[in-house]
Length: 192
Image (tube, rainbow, N blue to C red; front, top):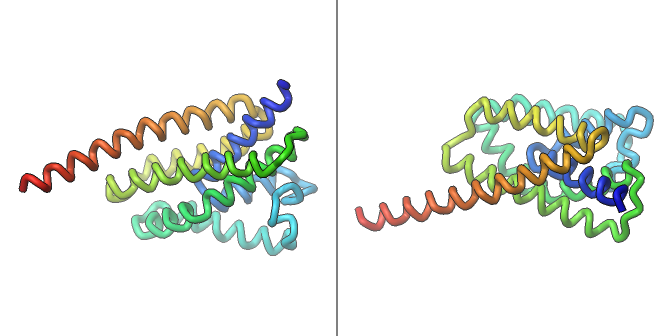
């Protein structure tokens, strides 16, 4: 039972990384498995590793450097919001396979991972539009946290899973605050 729990925490950690960035965690998961590359990642295992390395490296560079400017943040937010559920599910399945946990059916792991990644990204998009762009220190924090969550998914899944659950809790609390701000702004416009 403990091994299954550790595998679930690893899947949550990997999925939370996909809620931050899309290409960066996929690139990291391939590079951390030096000989297998993306063998355990669904859909990506069918693509030639050199082609996939080129695509993910280019996209990761765009995520890293493009997110430092407002236009790049807007493009990243839209792409990441659309793709985060799929990548979150793929990352969760890959973490489950790499941790050698026999958990069936895997589509449940994919759904939970995809939902976690989508919720994290959706709240981030809400804050992006509320603040008219994310401050640069948050973007750097997000980049670092994404890499650490991928590392934790495979080296310290308990800590990575706890960080993922904390991020989910923070997102739920944050979205409530964002909703109250929106309702207050709407009321203020009615009185004008």
